[in-house]
Image (cartoon, rainbow over all chains, first blue to last red; front, side, top):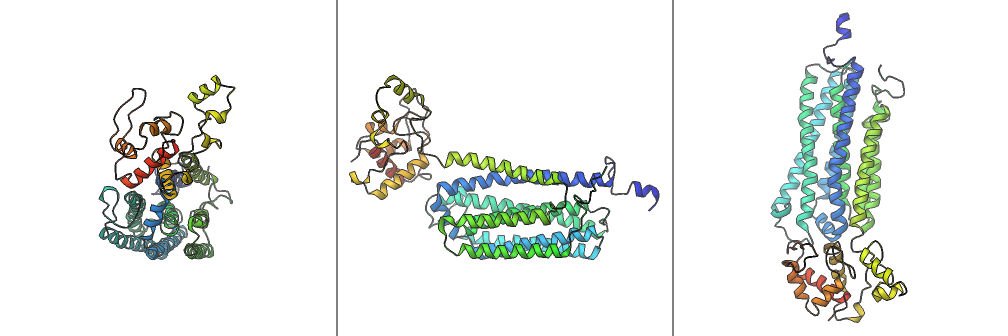
Length: 215
Length: 236
């Protein structure tokens, strides 16, 4: 690299003093966003808690209709995708192009598997008439099943939307990676999407037991 | 300039071993939480499930999200947001978990004035006989014809749908249950009809919103009506 390039590499944006500051700012921005996401999902977890406290019989009955096997598989899928995501970041940190591409691709693939399983789960529910709110036409659950499924679909649906957006961004990062943009001097975007993806995994780590496992 | 101390270096490359160890731990704990869910712990099943979930989330945050190696401020941001979430949930639950448990002798001006005016009367004479404990009225199942199961259903339905506005002896947002029981003595259907389509009888009360059958079906509503008549002293 020319002396000029060393001071101003192409990936350094002009409003930053040096690459370290850019890296720090990027990460802080992502953490602040994740802080907001905690509260964003937190509001929904509060709705779950209130409904669970006031209508335990509905929660118990409704939960029987959720497919524990599919939920468990999805948990393993997401945890594995967190592993591949971490390995992708590591590959970028060590400027190893092939593992970077491979792990990004695996993460995207696992994300798609998660959504596919969700699609099967949801279509079973729609067939049985287990729909949210006023669309509910199911049978066999006492209390307020339309509210239960309202909360179920909003929470898992919103989470699924986050997975979908993550897949979209990961695809973009993958295409940039294939052009050779990422190396140990600059891997901020990979790091940041990694943080986002791990967070989405954490939300599922709570969603899964609360809906599928707990009575 | 840059935060590159050895301790808090986000450029720290996590060894493969750490990645795979954490991954294995997460898989094992997933298996564990699924196993525990088959143990039939009933209402207690949430405790082990949440404990395991919190440990798993911590592992993801501490290792996969590099909080172990990173600038401490990022951990502060993350845990601060969790703290505020806890405040939000905790305070909201103090409302939800105490519905129907308004203690008339605490914090109500009307009863306070009564007590102040007749201070030589004992509190137990002023309050209803059932309320010497100061909490919700004791179930009167053994004295009346309604089955105890119906009364329990009525009581829990009352807590859920009515207790925020109506308590036994005190005006809250709505009239006290004792009054309601006097008005609808022997006529639970009257209470039912009012709930479905509340009129506006009095100036000093706000308009009661109707409660639709989709929120509270007829059977449960009648159970609540009967419960109110019982505790209001106007039973069958």
